[in-house]
Image 1 (cartoon, one colour):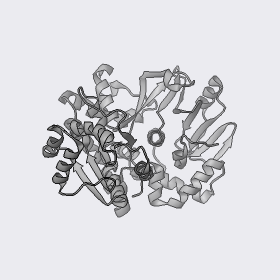
Image 2: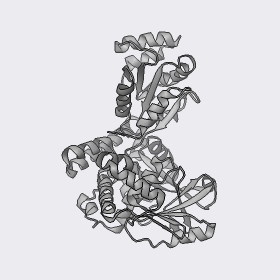
Image 3: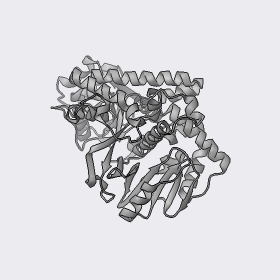
Image 4: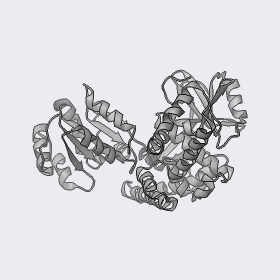
Length: 437
């Protein structure tokens, strides 16, 4: 399975000032698979070290590192293979389970830069917020990995369509109607299948949506198990799970703002702040904060008390919401439920392209789904679940803040007029931080 991170890994390998690479990302998004595939293609050998529940391996680092040379001798003996500079890729998997190994990356960077190391972890963000954790600041390169975005998904199902979508996006030209309809069908399938690699692979093998849903619910259950394993207290684990389980109902509301009362009556923000932080740092959720002004920098106008929470993968949301694939693919789903999937999908694609997520609201009278910043420009983004493009909030925002360019996402074809760029739902991945018209 081709992933966009593949090119970034090659770039990392070939750069002159290469440092050990640290890859963040939720469980089961394909970190280990991509790293091992990369190692097999571009190195003479791969030395793989898995730290979770591996006290013997951890003890090599925890006993003290007199020198990188002596450490390499011990690691070579542990895997019974020679570790050579330049030609061996060392993989430190689930490195957050061994803080001493994480700290060693600094020593490798300073004294053994000719050894290539990629470290990965599903709970790095969680581990690093704990008291006493050490992080090799400035001594590692970092990448983040998410579920397949829609571009990566189409790389599996219809690669030639990607070139045409990009061309139409860049030139504001209409996609031929037959191909537009075909791309919409792929988009609807993506809402059901999502971007978790194992789920996509399962669908390719079986074409069974029932098996897809079973796999997705299994992943959701694994996430809940992780909450019990990687939290400090049982109380926090239960609160993590309570938030996670309430996400479908949070997003099913017409106003998708996160409400603590949906968790339980009398729930208070201060009791759930740590759990929200844990879920975000574990890459299980995406947080979209409200802004009070459409001015740059938008982060300066954040209202942290009002926010929306999306799931990291739209397919997992669809399964957890118990939506029927027949309703999604047949376009018969209710407006509120379809709106929830659409917003989650757009949030996932924007996040994958490196955008911090914000929405705007004005005294409960107008609301804009997303607002992004490109250099010094504020770009309002309206997301519609189908072809209806009436948007009083978008026009209100543009007038209020003198915005001359906006994006409207819907099932309609590409187009541009009155300062609004029409972007079909299947082309959200094209909204990036590069130069575009």
